[in-house]
Amino acid sequence: MEQRFLRSLLKPSVYPDQTTSVELVQTHVSYIFLIDYFAYKIKKPVDFGFLNFSTIDRRRFYCNEEVRLNSRLCPGIYLDVVEIRETPDGAGFSGQGKIIDYAVRMKRLPAERMLDRLLAEGKVSEHEIRAIARTIATFHLHAEQGPEINGYGAIETIRANWEENFRQAGQFTGKTISSRALTYMEKWVDGFIRANEGTFNGRIAGGFIRDCDGDIHMENINLGTDGNICIFDCIEFNERFRYSDTAADIAFLLMDLDINRKAELCAPFIEEYVKVTGDHGVTEVLDFYKIYRAFIRGKVESLRLLDPQISAADKESAGERARRYFRLARGYIARKGIPPSLILTCGLTGTGKSFIGRELAFYLGVEIISSDVVRKELSGVAPTEHRRIGYGEGIYSDAVTARTYGALLETAEASLAAGRSVIIDATFRNRSDRDAFRGLAERHAARFCLIHTTCPEETTRQRLDARETRGRDVSDGRWEIYLLQKGEFVPPDGRETGLIELDTTKPLDESIDSLLDAMEMPTCG
Image 1 (cartoon, one colour):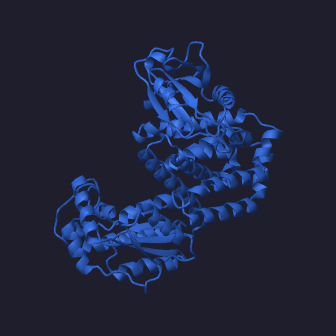
Image 2 (cartoon, one colour; image 1 turned 45 degrees about the horizontal axis):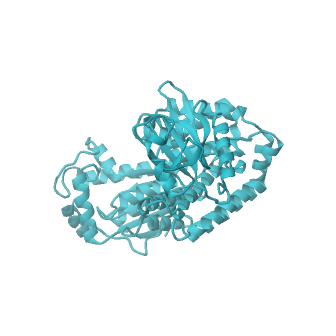
Image 3 (tube, helix red, strand yellow; image 1 turned 90 degrees about the horizontal axis):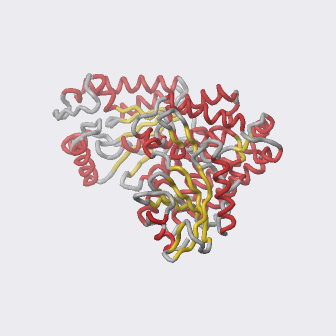
């Protein structure tokens, strides 16, 4: 749509519904004009191959499809399709001028009741997640199925969907995804599909290929104060993306919970969903489809980089989101292929070891145990309580440090004994401490990785000063502590097995990619 038409639609007077303001929100495929109580959604004239809104007839058809299909999970919200006509002042919704486009008119849902916002505010419990699971499960039980729809669950279609995604993401190598990561994922997907043909065929035979929603994620779920759940903005533009395994439908929301660090809500969702549907085999393919969903989100965010109407700042944000999604997809794969591992972060205070450890733990889906937290727990000190005591004194005395490392060793042993990987985040200033954990890994036949973080002293000082100003970190590290630590720190060298040297001044993307590269090797380092 021409800019002059878009500008005219920012005037409250052009709308048939009374409003005091108009706000424009853009996605990679839509212009959404928000007025006081309604929203008008106009499709962009784009053609991405998998989505084609390039002609006005196509946009009219898919506007009507959007209203029809969204009535299934969001009844009463999608109202109708309205004509946009050319007027002397630009564009409007009345008059006898030429029809220049169409818009979906819908009731405006309260932003404060969107699931993503409620989760961020800590206002969502297991109770709400189970209610959402029941809503989706009931929808799936009654969703249309049949021979034509079953074809979309066939191996050939699954493979074609992945090949299309890989092809379209390829243009962003070096920007939002590395060529190595793309090749790695291509090989893994091909191997998984080959090895699980029987499982996919079983999903078809079991009746789990349905006319689904296709786009269930946190930003598309509204929780009414009356308990009503509205799931909106389904896929209307491509049956191939909507006709799918029901596992692929719920995988989107589960992946969304993961990337927003709400993974603890996934288990109750799955439990409730299986209880309603009886689909006990869903877990056999759920991880595969979570990888699929993360990859698609990475691709979709990357496509925003090609939109000339999106600002440079918005493109930068989209690029970072794309990189996160692609890393999560790769992390999901790594989780499936990595044997039980003991991973240590090692380095002086302020060198970024805790931050890197938390990020790696997130992508690998493993627990991270912090020496700072354990030390304070053992000493009866609140994690965020800071004490400016001298080096080697109080809770930082040799005796407390020895107890702390002993507790860390016990925790690591419990994890490895249970077959779980774990990251231990500590300074590990002495080789003897590192060797104790290396020996533990050997006793449990676990893989051992030692990540040694370094950066220039000026960078360290800036980080420590910023940390002290914030006052929210668990660590009590300060510049004077760094200088004293430095005098006692024995850095690991090439004689220590499993060593990974990491310069934390490099971009986070590069650092995490290099660590995931190392995780994929038979041995770390």
